[in-house]
Image (cartoon, rainbow over all chains, first blue to last red):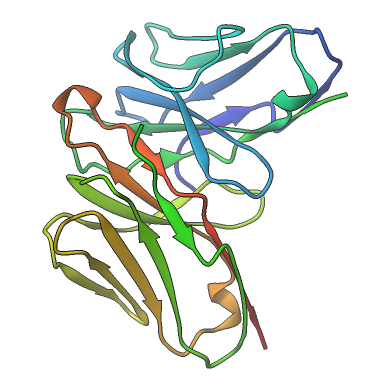
Length: 115
Length: 114
């Protein structure tokens, strides 16, 4: 158990809809990362937050947004959903992004299916 | 954009065989990590290599970081069915402003048949 909790585990929704994915980081970790994993592919970095502030941005679409709250949990909002957004969305956490080799602890992901 | 290419993409072998997975890039990384992911779960860190030429061993797994810090390999000796999974390499940027951001390779899906 990595200590990172993601909800929901599965989500099925229709095109054009909006969903919110939630992540609670490991206790004590200040940084949260969101990754997207399409079928049989590696992980694509979306965005990183550290202590409530955006730290780094990857290939995140404008239809997607995220935030990290004062209690350090994070939410990833996906809107105007398209079929191609179907994927596994992973959240990971680490203690301090300045500790450059600190490991990422991944949750078990949210599987999003857009129909 | 820093890219990491893994090969092979798929590998199916018999229990007891040896195998090597490669992770290559044209970019230099400050460090490289290997993760293993099982179905329905998130990736789990296996090892971090930092120094060019570094070799690390984890039981039957041997990890090597290339001298130029652009590539890495994972060698498994006497593979077992429990080694089945998706193996991912991930590189950390030399850019200090990139924080702890990792760039992942496309993964190697390994199946070890009993």
